[in-house]
Image (cartoon, rainbow, N blue to C red):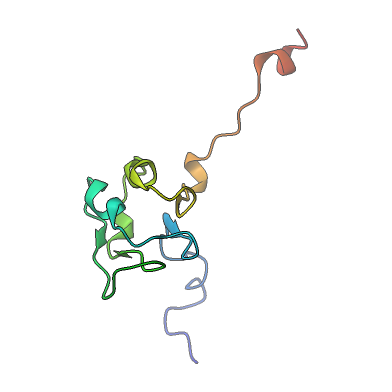
Length: 97
C-alpha cells in the first residue's frame, strides 16, 4: 500500500484519548450520557462488550466524567497526551530534606 501523505504520515497517530476494555464494558452507555463534549455516539449494538463509538475523539476535554460515571471499574480509561502527563517528584527528594 502506497503512502500518499509523504514521509511524515506515520509520525502523528490519530487522537485516541478514550480506551475501552470490552471484557469489562457492560454496554450501559453511562459514559455517553456523562460526556460534556459529546464525543460518543451510540454503537450499533448495546449490551456487554459493546461500548459506544468515540466518533469525535479530538473533541475530548479529558475531564474524566465518562470514567467516573462508568459502573464497571476499568472498562474505560483516559489516555492523556504526553504534554499533559505530569511526573511528580516530592520536594524532599529534590532538596534532600
